[in-house]
Image (cartoon, rainbow, N blue to C red; front, side, top):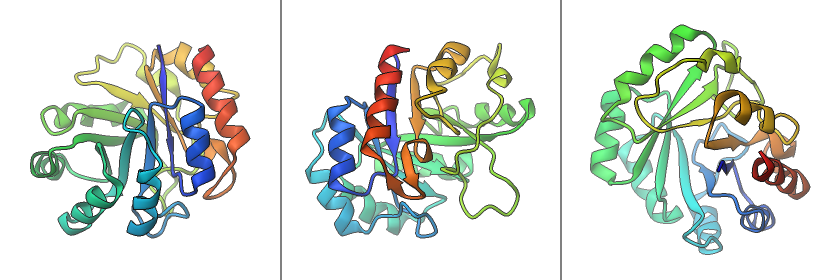
Length: 211
């Protein structure tokens, strides 16, 4: 069975769609350059609407401990998702905050997978995401997809999830092609950057359930 994380939720309406569609995880973004960035008060309000069976994942870009402390408390986070965070730093965060730790690996070529093994013992899950173009303002959430065949024959040393350009039209193929048991989308369920569509969320989750 494949489950899904809907990332970048920022409104009560979109959170309701995540819950109604039976997503397993929801992503709360704490990165000011992102159009999906949340204040701590907004995160607290969204967390209060979320049942604990929907796992709350805080999304960060190489964060400082102070930001993590406030975000973990405000969002009542079950997990932290780290972008552009070296393995040693991820290991420190995992130990200090005692939360499930995801490390994002940006993929464009097969050689990008070499870094996965460095996170064994430092992260609980790898999130394979597409490498964004040089100079991009964000490390993810830009609707960029990578070649799923790059994962063919790769021996995953720890649990993993698939992200990068997924939407209702292609997620079924992505699951069949890669064998992913957890998929993650953000821009694929938006009507504009940072603006979630409840209809697209519903369609995506229905497509995952059918995969």
